[in-house]
Length: 468
Image 1 (cartoon, rainbow, N blue to C red):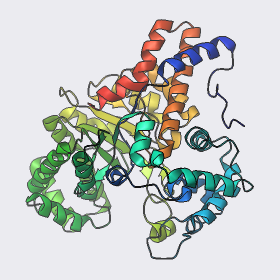
Image 2 (image 1 turned 90 degrees about the horizontal axis):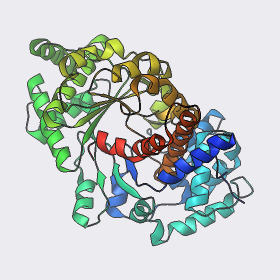
Image 3 (image 1 turned 135 degrees about the vertical axis):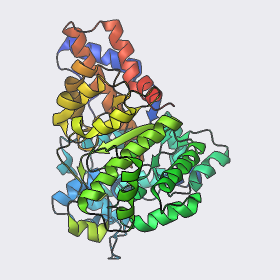
């Protein structure tokens, strides 16, 4: 039994479907450019077999356990490691059974499409996951995971990944990236500079992180000038390990343009733990502008992922820590928020700032007009809650009329779930080709142009935007 419709996500009218299919066929085998994500460099450095199916597919994927938790399944039952030391389920088969018996909860979601694609096209399964098939599917996947063909590097090559970027803290020693580089393996795995631990005072252990940053770099992070010098050195270290981009996950997109004296006074309050909530937000805002200045210097592409209310449940955060499915989108302003940064860097040649949002209402009102004016700005693809067929379609409809295609950066998967990467890129390729087919059949785009744009959206734009 096929788990997937081969014409999924294409138009239903015959002319539109035929053209979308032809466009898709022209790009479906192009290499995957994965310029931003959260896979583990350790996998590719050590190239050890993946663990059991549950720990590969269920435990690390907040798309999966978020849905299950919403229906009353506890994170501990799913084997998600606790932060407070409380015991959690360790039997992979039992975790898998719990997942399988609740698989119906994913009907109609992109997660279901990604999973069915993974089950069918990667693991060769031909039965739908359910309580009745739980053990058989677990055994089939587990058996494959013992073979060399399913080790991380082999899957990287099978997936036709040209380059994948991981994301590491500014304090990371990048040892696994050095191990990959020194191994002689030709797969391209690069890092991304994520400095939130030393730019966001609300991150746990911020004062200790500043101290560690000073120790690592030999810079005096007791002063604001020393802090910026330390970032400059760490960015250079990351570039030596392949980094072409930075990433900043802030609750808002607010930026600031303080004088050096004002920034130093603010930092003194923040560093000593005396800053108010308003001071902490202003410091984050100033650090975004400082990171933009450094990108003008060193050419690293800057990404801002704004608009998430992190760790909405205090109880889940206390018991399980960050990234456990309780981050929630919130309204986000970009026009006023970005103006201080853009006043400083917005017209600088060679500077690229890629914007992501969890607030879809700003696509046509704020983000597309901004990207359609400032030469440094590019729009990242639909992110997180919206990297779904409908979200991708809404994105194209909202931004293309003002920003066009060439102020966007193609697709990136932004995932920890390694096995879902081909499925996620396949969905994006299908949705984009369906959208292009609609432009052609309604007389807004020439057919030969659609083929060129399909290739751009699938491959070229991401590669060029991230300087890969």
